[in-house]
Image 1 (cartoon, helix red, strand yellow):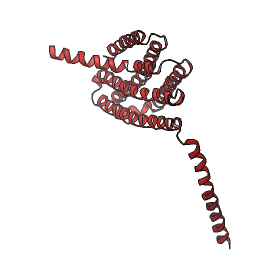
Image 2: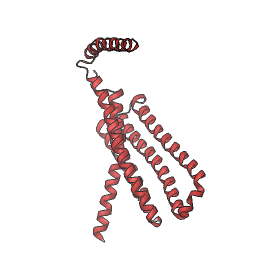
Image 3: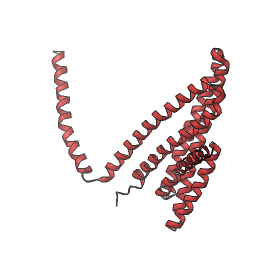
Length: 136
Length: 113
């Protein structure tokens, strides 16, 4: 499902960028849309990595049961590393947003539209799921 | 003797602060009067704070529910993980909207000519 949503988000982002290019007739707007999509991609990358680590941890703990505390030292260390990675990636996202908007002067409305591409992809996926259920 | 000196010094501090506050307030009021730029910066800060608060609440609830579900049924971890990632990304997208709007208000303020 995640792969499908990611693919839909890329398609939606490119389609919105083309729409902005035709509507505004400049380069900054479609680049802004792509920049917004890039921001969402970076944010998704950060969330995905952290969730993968957390799920692995939960699965390991539930397999080990109450004796899972034996792995406490290494578990604690890797939890800290996961958190550091998560916050570093989100810092990179904030820095990229600043750079795109203030330094590169990309179109802010385009960037907002680019961020919305993941919501469009989620909506497309929901509609697709509803249609499949209705067919079944 | 010592108590009265302490009371006297405290009273003098209060008087000084009481005299200084209206002076600062007048300066601030003069600087801020009719300035939409300053209000937009305050608004941006509050918007970001409220968005971060709401998103943290929602994401915390989502992660707690997912952790509980995976602990109850580790076999369904893959599906729960997918739903969790999608939910977190959608919540995060709302925060990024607000971040972008705050950046617009901070740096590209449309209210400043």
